[in-house]
Image (cartoon, rainbow, N blue to C red):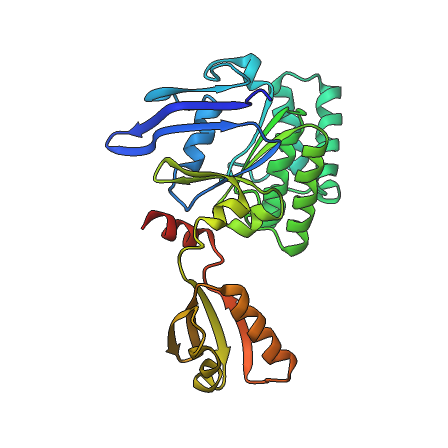
Length: 305
């Protein structure tokens, strides 16, 4: 399979701030999550791929070519930025329509493409309302509509789930998957691991501007299996409930707080099964169970220690 994006020794700095540091990256999948905490360099990598930034060192190629000032490559790419930049009194339709004209479409093509993109993102009912009346989620969807309206081969979505309610997120998951099924390559930037797991199991983890790990989500998670997992249990009787786990060899520590306790274990499945059995048997003292390590930041914490 031909790589869609290839970066070799890619670096970008702004004065003394290093945003991307000697990054080697190859993307071949149809849908991949570009993951990292805020400030990790994800948006900078995307802007380098869009040709908006010139590499300080190294190179990046998209469809086998350098993207900067390369209109043939850029016309094959769609981009939904993380931040908003609207004329607030314009309608959502006008926002997409006039960008289509700027892209080079005829008025008829621009109108048809804008209407189709609004339909894809479920904005048809509100596309003629001013953007200033839109909710955060609607503003996000109209940004994605403009990215889709040119029918790109490669689509960058920078934090696309921001502001969407649960239903909107489900619709967005389905939309991204349908685009991939139709042959489009979609690169989704996010700092929340579970969002990406709903879309794809292929991820690239970016940390301090460098590639920390790349592969399937399950493989990335396996990297932290050697470390104890933290499980938070909210309960009205923390010490009595925790007593069940004291004798477990896999449990390495139990810390109590005002809401319950946090236990650290090398066998998370055993502890979850035991907690579930206790609740099934009618143990009403347990109010909630949460995996305190079920976050991208926790994965990074383990991998960077």
